[in-house]
Length: 180
Image 1 (cartoon, rainbow, N blue to C red):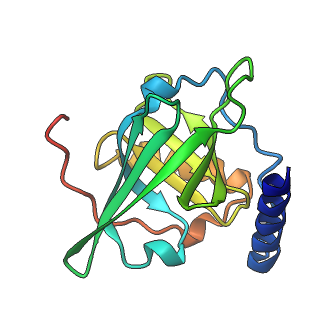
Image 2: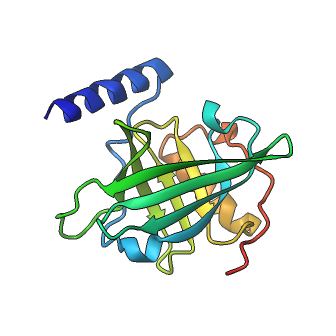
């Protein structure tokens, strides 16, 4: 209970400090299948975040662990140097029926952040993710690059949801992983 209270306070303070409206009015995808979400995702676009400043060739690898948690390895290249960070994610509502695409992610225990998948292609090839405020937005793909028309359509939909899409950054694409 105390952990949830502290997490809520931290999230509320973060949203207030950024001046961004919360994303509580944006539903997460339903009928989410965590096993299908595992693997490598490439970052196509993002709203700027201090922890990703000047980061290119960004990818995230998700691996389901035997205890039901998810190992998250985010990596990229900054000034020619490879950077990575490893964290843990867990389903926000593991007993929900249907399961929603909401996770809690921590790169610095005991602090967890919201990870809400608000769009997900039926074949799990493209995902749009936000967090607790409209100051967070990522467009992810199973491939390092996305067709301009597809990306433009996503950006248009995100604009109608109140995201500041004119601030989106488009990192230099990563080289595909060998398994692709």
